[in-house]
Length: 218
Image (cartoon, rainbow, N blue to C red; front, side, top):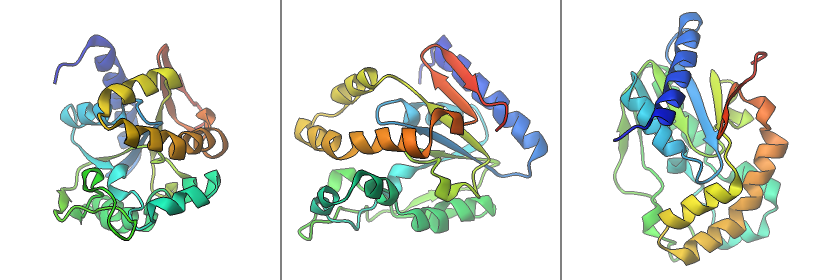
């Protein structure tokens, strides 16, 4: 992977912050890397993993596959934000084992499997297995949700303009019908989440196009 100077600066800044936390907090620590769709969370998480002794857990693996697709339309925006991830499965199968220095193993949600005949989503038949590391990076939208606040040591937000993010998604997603459906269901949820549940001031570090914002009280 080629890392440009801006990306290198971001990685260095985050790694410096993580290093300070590990000096005062028993390891392993849990870092939440949050941001709306298309903000570059997965790319940054991969870079951090390559440049440090860290393990990445994608929150997308724990999408609420048991909820039929049509049922999302009947739920309010706050209800979708509440139920988007299988929080208990994320805790029990991934975060708690890794925080206890144990191997974590789970069946990830499979975006390519499509919707089953019962209206629910597919899960991969293969397991994801992650070995413990001093730093656990929970990467994905909603990853800093207060429901996990008792586990998280450091919260990072990638805050990019919606137009830039949507342009990235449009280039990345070949299935435009799927993308249109995604925007209908989740754009309002992300806006609600990052305004009503986790505002910018809730994060320890915010990454923007113009630099970094640190919360000295975090």
